[in-house]
Length: 181
Image (cartoon, rainbow, N blue to C red; front, side, top):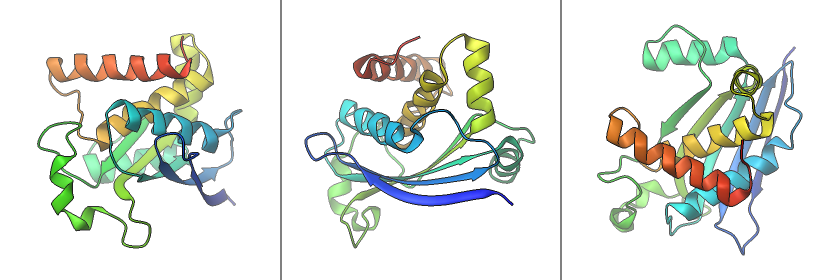
């Protein structure tokens, strides 16, 4: 039977506020304080892009088989991937939050937090890619969180110019946190 747990953690008030609803399934665990690191990186990413709201993100850590199934179902790609991002908001301009003032449905009615969306990460891919790229598991995991939070705030990397902007932001976020290669 799969190990499965759900918790919610917020960043301290002096930092950009984010609640991460954390779920984990599968037989393996990453050798990291995954929930706390996710909150720290997500908060730093939101602060970096200037999100003016307290926000919430759902994060699922899973295995290759499960993320492959999701990738096939939602993207039509039949292979495991490292991370999937499911934004709840469509941004006209990446990182522009002004239009949200009039969009009540983008906020959790109970907490008032901006509902950004869902992140799914393959724990197996985190370990494999850390080894492949020659850096720590912590760095790979933090990179995937920063990458996905940027997706949840409208950034993408389909076109070369977008990719360059997104890569620079990811690098700067991780440098601010002291999580480097």
